[in-house]
Every structure is written in C-alpha cells, then in structure tokens.
Image 1 (tube, rainbow, N blue to C red):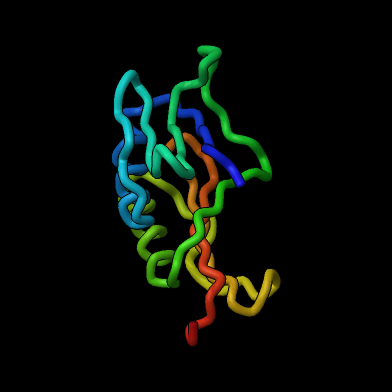
Image 2: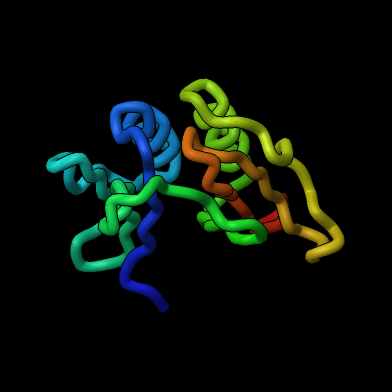
Length: 128
C-alpha cells in the first residue's frame, strides 16, 4: 500500500540505537546511515526513513497519529516493547490484548526519543 514512511528526528545520534534495536526485532535491516539520515526495510519494498526535517525546523510529532508495525507473533510484540524501552523509548501501552479492536489483537505502544508514537501488533490467535 505504501512505499515508505518518514519520521522526523532532532537527534539522529540518539534515534539510531533506538531504531537499530526495534528494527532488528522486527526483522527489518538497516539500508542507510548517512548524511544524518537512517533507513530500514527494503529498497524494493516498504521502508522507514528517520531524518531531520527538510525545512530545517524542529521535528515534532502529531497528536493522534502513529505507525503500527505488523508482526507474526506475540513474542515479537513483547520484544519490540522491551527493545524500545531499553534504547531510549518510553511506554505508551504495555504488550497485551486489545479486545475492543478484535479478539486476537495483541499490541504494544511506545514513543521514540523524539516523541513519535509507534506500535507493534499481532492479529493472530495463539492457535495460528
């Protein structure tokens, strides 16, 4: 559905260990680390860029927006949350079921060092 997502950062040096850790958990390789920019994913598929804003103004996060990364199992959601917190992120919702979305919706929410809200989610049941 999409080519890429871009998130702004005010400090790529601070963002790098955070994104290295969570992207490793999600199985997304580093594509680029140059010119104050980071990229993860696949050049021929979906990717995420972490960059200082092109207009030179400070990066800021939006209220009500977040990026959700799909995972194949609940253990990856747990590992994503732990890696985020261990690398400068903050908790926005511990791993767990969110049955108000659907019976098997298992997710965790974090904020990156710049305040961007991220989520890992698994839609599979324990039987899948």
